[in-house]
Amino acid sequence: KVAYFHGCATNYYEPEVGRAIVAVLEHNGYEVLLPDQVCCGLPMQSNGDFDGARRQAQLNIRKLGPVAGQGIPIVVGGTSCGLALKSDYRELLGIHTAEAKVLSEHIYDISEFLWMEYEAGHLRTDFRPMNRYIPYHTSCHQKLHRIGRPALDLLGLIPQLKIEEMGADCCGMTGTYGYKHEKFDISYAVGKPLFDRIQSTGAPLAICDNETCRWNIADKTGIPVVHTVQVLAAAYGLIPDL
Image (cartoon, rainbow, N blue to C red; front, top):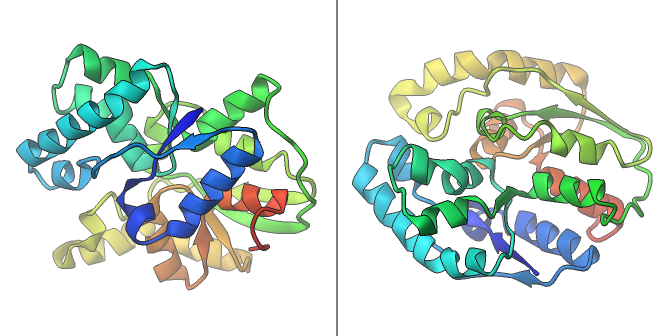
């Protein structure tokens, strides 16, 4: 069994990401649980509403705690939500209960979890060849997980697929910062080198595992941006080719 924290972005805006994650997990023999959950609280935290963020955190600790207490891993598709559950509740919001600790120890980024399964010899590798080139952006929150590069490692298992990491510091969105009218010019200036580089590749598709970064890049480059697991699902033949 594995539990899935889908987060607001998947639940309300990108259900196709959630369907791909569930399909890949089930393809690898997992029963996917969808425990009751609320927003991780990061939007509140990012905008200074720490009391609101703590309320969300306490709700998730109460709802997800029993799952973690059974030793069931909880996978998260969004790198920002995953970081909130994994470390922000304790390190930034100051919630140091035993329940918060147990929860944090059972949270995994979806690519982190799948790569662990591969290293343990449990991941199916019946990927169809994908003869194409796709640029990849590593988000800031993804780097803060300190888990290496499991998404790129997973994509490297797909025959004939060439992935190039763009090496950009930031896309400029930085959570909800880039959504603010008064911050748009700064946000765009930060992300422009990345946007230009992706456009210069001529690729019809890009990959990013953070929701707001994904939307920002798609908006500024005019090309679709997908999650790593959507590419894996397509290579497994679980969803139509991207």
